Image 1 (cartoon, rainbow, N blue to C red):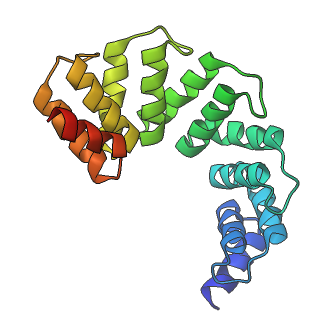
Image 2 (cartoon, rainbow, N blue to C red):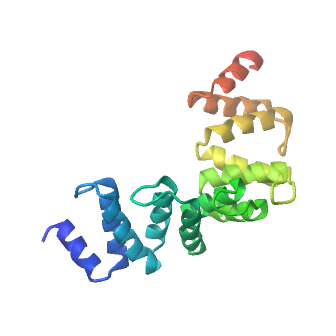
Image 3 (cartoon, rainbow, N blue to C red):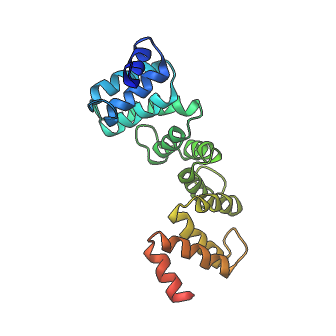
Length: 206
């Protein structure tokens, strides 16, 4: 039997992980002809058994209207299930929904809660967003030192916006000790990724 035949057999026998994987194959056209309807079929089978990957991917399908009618409400429902199981991508997306009020009532406290959950698992985008929450007091008590901590983590993982912000923070002593050399370093890193404002700052101030 081929890999796809093995996968299909396991999926048909009720293996949630195989069902999730088969759904992904149909969604992406990996090894089979792309078919969003079949992707949804297998994602639902796996998601209903509690597979977090399938729950996350099913949420994406509902968000983007792939194989199903677009529905932010249903996307949130599946992301919440995956987030509760510790899936960082689902936690980040769920936080974004609470932050924007898409598919769920706007709630900055819950947004910060889920950003923190994802950030603690190393999600760089969530770390950047959590830094913003702390620096602005969105859903948490304003705390520039905590904001700086998460900003540094995101910047080190290559988030260009975090790198640029960190340059600003070091230049002005926001949440960190003022350090011109560190400011220059982070502006350079952001500039290397194409941040035009960082390039302008380097030319103007350094």
